[in-house]
Length: 334
Image (cartoon, rainbow, N blue to C red; front, side, top):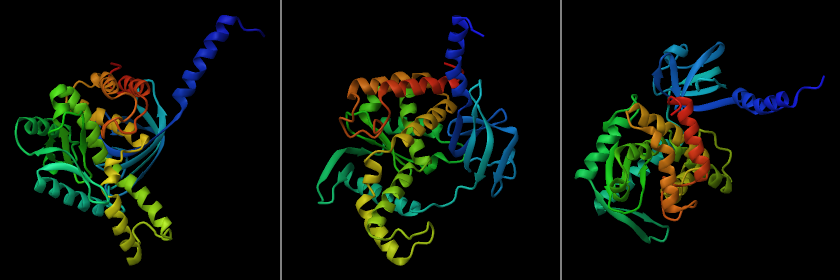
């Protein structure tokens, strides 16, 4: 039977949309809010399908009892309302991971050195220092960032766990270190309103709460240990020789694991999660796509300055499109 051309056209146009809706979605994040029966994981609203499988540890006896702050993995499909209908959910307590304590201690020392010198800087292996600017611990800029950050912190954490600093530098930059110290450049604060600062800061907080530095560092560390012939190391079962080698690599890679930028997957995840942080705090997240365009207009498509927020993101048009889609999925289609 020959179908009319108009009907064929409708079928052809509808097929990609149907395929996209049926595409499996995988989430690997934390339970951070509850929203009308849904669990918010990686910024997405998740509901367990009637026949869905749940695997829990600790106090997570079933889907409805997953404590906030637990690690959650999800497999499911996007629904028409933007939520994720999960066929599989796994939840477990957020325990200590490989290198987590070591990386935190390294950045505690780095933070102490910033404070001692009164400025933020980067130092290479030869001891040469590049200063980013004077470090401020009080004043109107610090109070503003502290006020915004306190609203952004997810409910299973305390605002007091984060320490806020401002760096005198005209560039648009912000970062949250693995030890929960936060640094924001004055250039960003002077050129952006509170909604925009919240979106940027939410993104950076997500890097810290989702332990992106540790995960990236772990990958680099294992590569280095492999080069040293120590690949026979099990997570949580490193021998003394392995730890000595790890300590040496930590000294070399500690700062670069943070300052070298995150992978695109972590950056895009931080966009999604950071947007949720800003939205839950009551900020206008519809400014997100245009904010990215402002960064692109200022710095171009590449990373022309040391800018952690810019880092290894998708191209500006792609990222703007992703953020608009995120708004449609989770924030009323705005």
